[in-house]
Length: 67
Image (tube, rainbow, N blue to C red; front, side, top):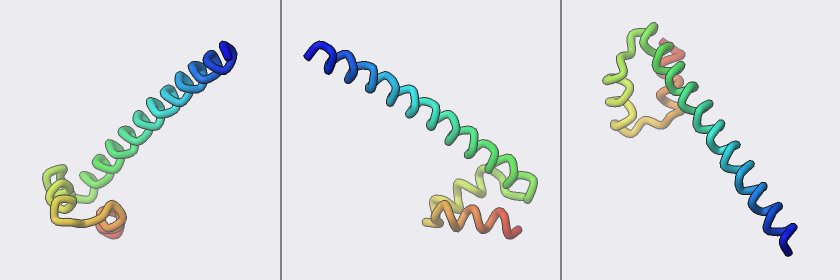
């Protein structure tokens, strides 16, 4: 039983680390997208406005990359 608890604690710690790293990668990806969008004439305010209008992430991506 003690070994099960130890393994579960180890597993929880590893999953938390994975989630933390995924969050960093996602944040970096969003920041890169915003930078690329800026080079194509999309301000952050415009991107936010587009997202609030109901555009999906896919539609935002397409709008930026097709510009």
